[in-house]
Image (cartoon, rainbow, N blue to C red; front, side):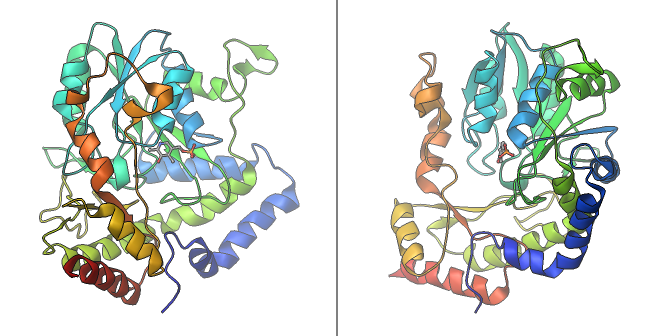
Length: 385
Ligand SMILES: *Cc1c(COP(=O)(O)O)cnc(C)c1O
């Protein structure tokens, strides 16, 4: 059996070595390291893939979120609602811009932001909602768009974990995750579903004016060379990273399919284990198994372990040479940097429970059935023991 890894970047690279190396070599030969033709080529490729009017590449996913908020002209004191159960980058940029983060609880079954909790958190100061498409599937965008419309709020999608996922509307039309709200942000961190070989990110929008504003912000607020109209940042996707992404984007659907296949095998084996709750697919496929619609692209395969056995299971898997992760171990509202007297513990029953129950199993494009057999049988033996 191949060594089990949480993410197998080397195995994936070996399979696409020639095309990636050629693409990188082109950049080095051209020496167009910043804003070279590869960046433009990748931008166009991604616009087509996502069916979105504008992709603005930038340096990383955290910048993408920050720049999206800057582009919308959010002002200090504006309240921005987001999920308590996510990676800190989402809330960090809200705080950095002196906006007021308002963290709310999530759903038990799909781990995404809870609609009732958003409703309860809206005040006259609320200006935006940031749904995070956690672990690879979209939040309830239809309900979020409705709330946003009723209260005149912006919707900024944190799509760092769900690139390539489809969102299915009630009328059966589909749109790619990240292209549904006013603006979407993604990350190309190496372990993400579309990862480069360093840092990278992008912002998506169908709004021409917003795209124009954002293109200036990523480049020091310049719309005309050496004319700085707004305060901007320096946030660029470098050409070598664009070369990697350009080579990998045509494989993204196949990569996501490989993740779905691994997830299906995990779920088939683990769904009858009484101490486990397998991931629910809430938009699209029935039965918790995504067959063909790409509504869940399994950035992570996250189980809930009931009965207080999560930490013991984590320790046991590590002893058996099986890596696993706990995303996320602490709710954001309990993190020192984001404490706020307005929060009431009674408003976070789900996050407070999930942090004690969740475990993410190895999930990547190279995972094979022999490895999954070993992982699942080790889990079952432990829980039966
Ligand atoms: C990875 C991630 C980010 C940040 O992306 P970076 O490229 O690492 O800055 C933001 N939000 C979520 C939900 C993420 O998973």
